[in-house]
Image (tube, rainbow, N blue to C red):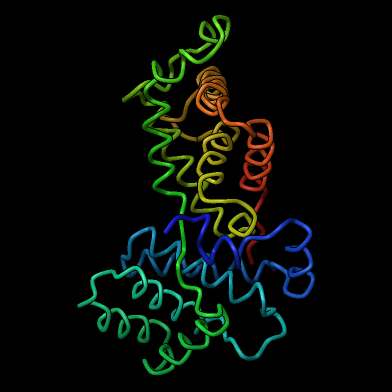
Length: 271
């Protein structure tokens, strides 16, 4: 099933105005982001794959989109964190024969009985109207990284002047390409702590992460210098034009993706 036909698209995808209505009742508070961060850290501790971590974070976001974390007594955040991870592992069919072990580990970490995790899992399913399928941007992100590294594929679609402007700094195997891949993936994971998952499609988020990565320089000895960052920004911009200009609604796509990139770069307030 494609994203366009999914319950995620039809039930958990909103206009900005509609999302604001929901957020007036259940705001995305720093405490919500705190638990999302703890959820992410716990996923890494119990060593579940990135897509399961992302699914669990999406489930947590869905619960507290329709139930205010600051006022509801029906959903205890600590228990919801544990149950979201367990449910995500089941839905994504991760090591089915290890699920009982995962349940025990989560219950021990949370200092709760296993049955409480299972009961909370049912509450989460009901809160999400049993919409469990989640599409993520990671596969699209990998495809874009591969495509952007093959400069000859998209450079030919540009004007002669813009072809000359392509620096080729993101050609296959370069250190700068590896930096772009790592930094954009970092931004994608970070986006699950924001409302981007309710406003933008996985493909839009994947493209937005490449654009946002050009505006968030690295630190340390191996980080790109100012000139390298400028070259990367130029080549990403030309790639977007060369690769997507053929689409009918190209201008709208660029506007939407730039909006998603801006949200990725917003400072996260976590308590």
